[in-house]
Image 1 (tube, rainbow, N blue to C red):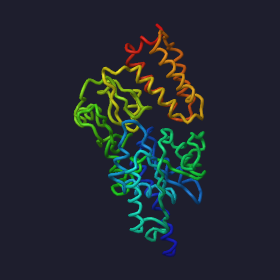
Image 2 (cartoon, helix red, strand yellow; image 1 turned 90 degrees about the vertical axis):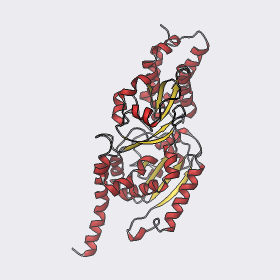
Image 3 (cartoon, rainbow, N blue to C red; image 1 turned 45 degrees about the vertical axis):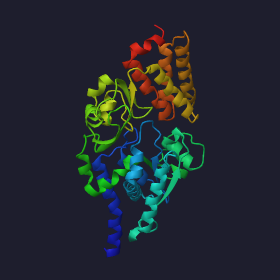
Image 4 (cartoon, rainbow, N blue to C red; image 1 turned 30 degrees about the vertical axis):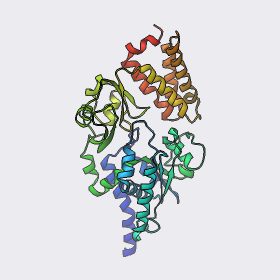
Length: 389
């Protein structure tokens, strides 16, 4: 075999070797459901097309979450290098960074970091003689929560109304402009440089068998030491609260973890949980983005549930009726029960939640029932006066 043919064959094997390292790492998405990163990249790689995209979902809209902003502004090159690695593994040549409109500093810092990469000749055609082409596009979002859903985000980038798309086909098959596309959040992509430098097994040695690596956790102002912390997956939730956060400033009855669609965790369940996907799923919660918003002891939970329904109704893209209408019926029922003698029918509420959960096209309507169910389960005595006996 000639040197040139051998060189080409070897260069074609490198992405596969890197993908094998990623599989060994066990990296799961940090934005919500904890989906396998290697599976997603491999799915995109296996689709033949001359144009592919890597899209970073930096539309961090969950209240109480600011870990993505930290990475965008303090570790911009970790993200950009992660996107380039993802592009190399899949054959993508364009990276799109979709940044929340309320983060103007992040837009500036990422744009400056990309300009520096251009100055160093690390972007463009045939980068450093490697036959690898890659470049970036930065897009400033317009403040819609639904754009955090990957398919609505893609429609937004295309200049369309940000509505959720029916799946299949999945974005890795037909995504941005109907081209194979990988969509991941900031924290997920920022893990790739470490894995490629240190190896997949090194990454997998951190955390648990099914939830490897570390997780950024956002603690709100109800903690004595609010802020952002990085903890190994598998760290007891009690340690996060007491050792990292310094405990609560005042009595707390529940924590909403993982954004408005995450689980509502009562204080009594703290010692049952560790910071990993499987522990939360086993107990009926969702780790998600790992933002923690506390609910004080004296705050009426019925008000909080109504707020969740109103939030979903306001932020719904409107494409599917379970989310669009179900969330509206939910807050109307609660508002009527709070302000009159009307008592809600528990079976009617359960049917509404089931319709939202099973009929919604995306996690906005489909995820709303989780915290409501948690509230009804763990705070029955507080909420029962609003329901028929």
